[in-house]
Image (cartoon, rainbow, N blue to C red; front, side, top):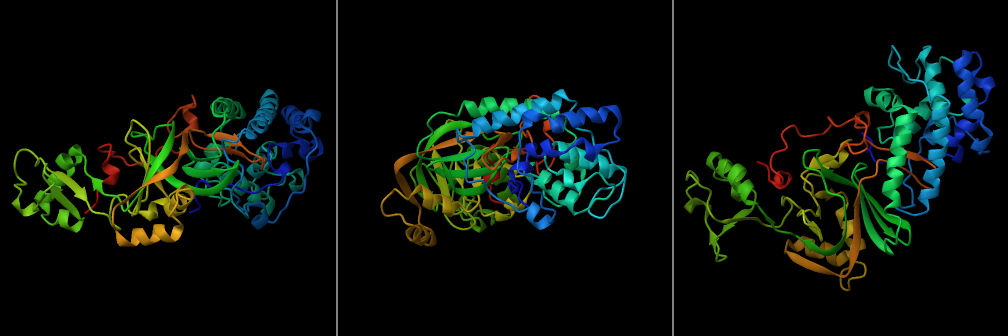
Length: 442
């Protein structure tokens, strides 16, 4: 399944502005309501845009990652222009709802495909040359994949449940979402520093930015709905290679002690050792695991591949005990919805980010980082200069590539419940304790 954070390459016309070239001749015969659509599409104020639509699906859906940072000030006028276009669409009645009686995908012929084509034309995903036939051809397939990619959906070209839900959110609701996020982005429009890290919670991605260009782009696993990751402006001050993980008292009581009662080898198998208040190691077999209270000991997991934080922990100043870290569960990055943690953020390709963070800290090239990790020796590295980190909640944006991006309002902060399209996907039904995402499994 394609990652939810993938974007899609389109021409300048391929965005909303592409709708400017859909003439009344292409949508004649749609009665009075259609004239309003014609007026939106042909409005002179929408400007003249390059219209080189490519019907080849493979090219129309080529995935790209923008080199323009999400928080770049250059994005604000672009987003304001997009808002003006949506205001015009809304004032003329918006776009039609797509309610097919059959599953629409490549090769299907059905009258509802005409409505789908009209919907995609208004949002700029389909050019007028595609026409308004009943056939779901390669033009429509490419346009649907483009729509899916910029909404963070798997670009398979089929109108499944969530593609239809995203498509049938009204233009008025999307306009409000754009305005809400414009305010959020304006609040971040100051000097962010020459180098910084950005985590966008709804998009579940991370950018390492240098000189107003994205130097590194990777995926993240962020907090589940019941244990959300907190937006914050802070600074990264250290990287820990081969980190220890110390179990919170609540996990010791609620999870580890019951597991030891069932399986006395649990601690040994997970490389968790016990220490008393003097730092002396205590053998697990000397502990009465059936006692009414959990032992007053420190439960510490050694560094290694099965460590809850795997190879790396990245600390930044915050009051929530949240941090960025590696994970032994790399398969989670293949999921569409990656709201799996209890607030901390797991980083895909964390060693790339670590190398970038330490580039100005003498003595820590990539080779040295890898060498230390291979030793499994706990190593704390203070950054020579702290790097700003901005953890943000942005569900709608557009950059220089002119692709309008929307993401689910997973934490329901945009003011409209229907924007939280997929809050039941990939969410653990029993969230448990705030640190339970770090609990080693049996």
